[in-house]
Length: 268
Image 1 (tube, rainbow, N blue to C red):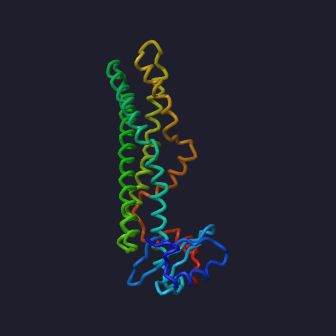
Image 2 (spheres, rainbow, N blue to C red):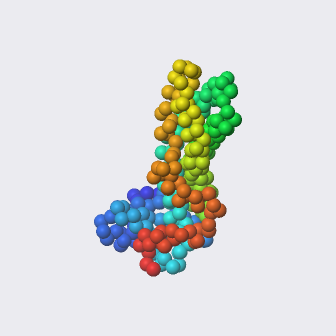
Image 3 (cartoon, rainbow, N blue to C red):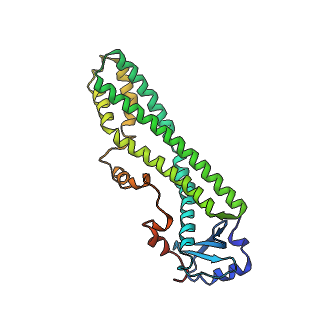
């Protein structure tokens, strides 16, 4: 595993020329093996600038390593996405909360069967239940992706080597993770009306007419605010991120290419 302290002397010498703002440079823990060449990849704090260096210490121009720059930037973004965002999702109580909600809704379903509720409200409840099942399944997919991504990064760090194949694999893992999270949010919005109908029905039941339903209504109360509402700011963000479910575009066709390349210290 590479670190600033273990860099070869000629690499450190070349790097010092770019550390003119007293920034703190950091090296990616693996060397990138791309199209027959070896590259060191550096990031700088707090500027968030980046630098690519050949293994002989020379600094290639950005026009000569356009593809390489995009690949290492994208790979690093995937690593950070899995290590920080994904880890936070895994550590959340999402799975625990929705398993509890699922069990409560099953109890509601049992009570509805005893009082002959309408077909419409039963269908709304079924959709509500299916939503909780889907969210749990998506959460499990997130956990699997984070585990697979973490394993992949550990393997490449130990080998001190990242290839284009490694990039494709990690990119796909990260995409699976992001899509599962997006699907969790989307299905909440799609089932919003069904949830409202179930809660409205429970709200209109007399407290004494069915004590079990009254008890379940009380237990369900915290979950009213747990799921997304179409009026929330996050709902707008979910709709704007619909593109994550589309086919992944080639690396060089990503709309964020100019923004990514602008951060490199390499000469144009």
